[in-house]
Length: 470
Ligand code: AMP
Ligand code: ZN
Image (cartoon, rainbow, N blue to C red; front, side, top):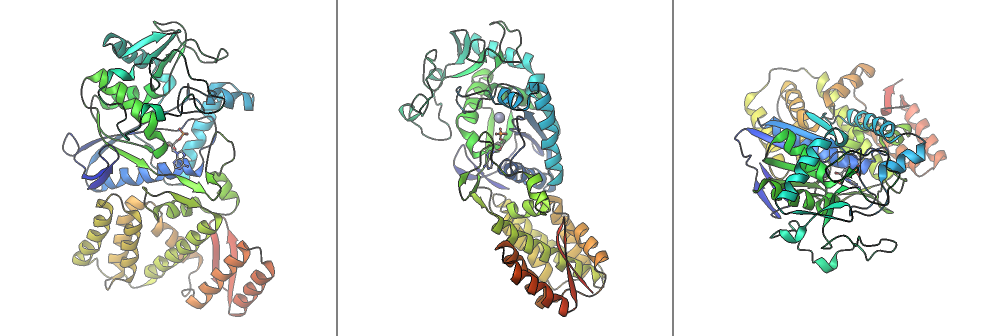
């Protein structure tokens, strides 16, 4: 399998350190608010990666942290504490906020068929681990105390900007309006490992440490949680592209300084989901959630399908129009599979099974090209082979795609146990969806009447639009 590795900026053959076994780490959510559908794009694409590795016979152990402490609104060491901000907004304790939004996150994941990682570790459960690693970094001369806080000294590294060739002077810290540079830092890029003195005097969660009562910085948690559960070598680390700098850069700095050797070989970064008005931001408070999509009548799996239609290394623009198009294609796909279910099934033809599966694998092996993998799925629908072969292949691909294709097609088949919906009707249904989206309700109504005249009824359900014969 070839994967683009952000560290080398090349597509490379993925070779785990120990044959057949993969250690995989994912930056988990900061649980001060609901995950937005942008965050979830990253988790969907990482889920596909994990499932495809398993599909290829690799034994994956996947670990995810939950950031429930010390994550600031800026990625540097500036800004407000997000958890504290969430607690104040909702008049709850930080731990109540963390519990509520952790549960909400995993509920969203479930709706999107995202598998739960093998290990989930909240940062607040690993404080001893953080202290141990920070002590080790001080001992090795990579960390220093200044103004009460412990900082990582980036000048001790041979190469700090591993993902990009940033220049120190280009760093935004201290330049942005309203952000004052931390005068304790020896170098601009240095970052906090442990806070004891900061502007967050009302910090709710604090722990004893050799440097006084305080709390950890954000970056240290991922290094420690990964080392604790996956050992000294990590095969692949995942996250959204915004995490590459400074978060992942700092993770590499402190992990390799601590371990004294290379830590993680492959870095998988998912590019952003944007709206027409720009980047979606959790901290700005205005964002789209899975529940919002559901309340508008969309099946969350349609959002997963929408994500799979484009490559994870391209930014993706969300609009309701794009989602409607995805919903229409998805419904059509399900109804085509439902038609295959109604055919005489026959036997699975091993030869065509293998050939068609090979083109799915070829797409996925080429840097998880999910849109080409979907093309391979459409090729199955049209293939000259038995219905049994097609259904077996769809089930096979769905181990990775997780779109519940056959399950949804079965449902449709039992709801609509008559003949197929003719293309002519499907076209009218799609025209009506466009009219509704454009709020042209009189056109939508007349299209409904036309469909009714032709003997079909349209129903709006939580799963989307359903059509059945009168
Ligand atoms: P957070 O909860 O803010 O720590 O983010 C959780 C994950 O979502 C991280 O891997 C981020 O890099 C990723 N992420 C944040 N915003 C977006 C976005 N607009 N599109 C895709 N992924 C994102
Ligand atoms: Zn992380």
